[in-house]
Length: 226
Image 1 (cartoon, rainbow, N blue to C red):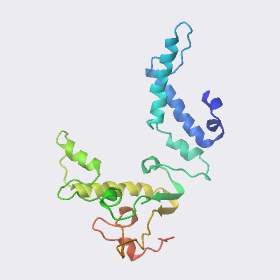
Image 2: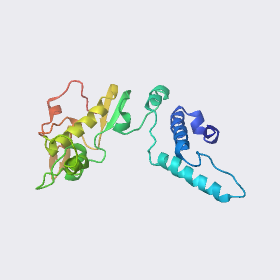
Image 3: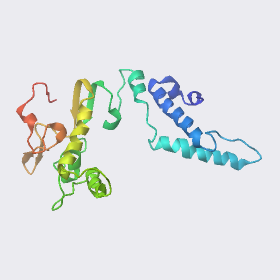
Image 4: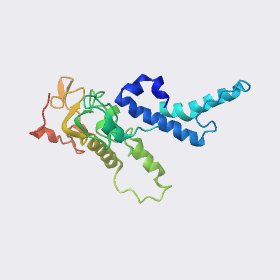
């Protein structure tokens, strides 16, 4: 807990306390299996002891923290963070949490209807194959399926890719208690201009279904475009 005196942010900021808990937990867990017991050894007669203990701490504590392997305690986020702070997190990290206002990125790097970003919005097959473009989870499932005892897959690769994307955005959208704000580069309603023509970008997160029907085009009373 001496970290509190070394880093003011962990002492003065409520969000810092959440991170402090994760750091302390990493130290406590490392002490169980690390030969240095999460301690730096000071020995003038054996300077190598100090060097080795520092290396062990870097390996067992700080590297896992830097790599994001130490999860923060989600219940602490909900209980300690003040309402005037904006939390930036992945959809996976937000699972189980709720906020009055939720802003979801549905296309900050999607400018056109290009195959290269289809895996983020509207999955499609590679030309002439049954492999879904850049959807590694589906393709890997097919590769390893024969080596497992899981029941045979009955849904197509494309359907499973759509299912995963729909589940992902369901988690994101259901975090909002009052207001859900979707942001991107292009207008959902007006699309983008290409070769003198206006084109829309099929995107599961903006109301398209897997048959390329845009349901929001019919209008929703509680959907307001800014």
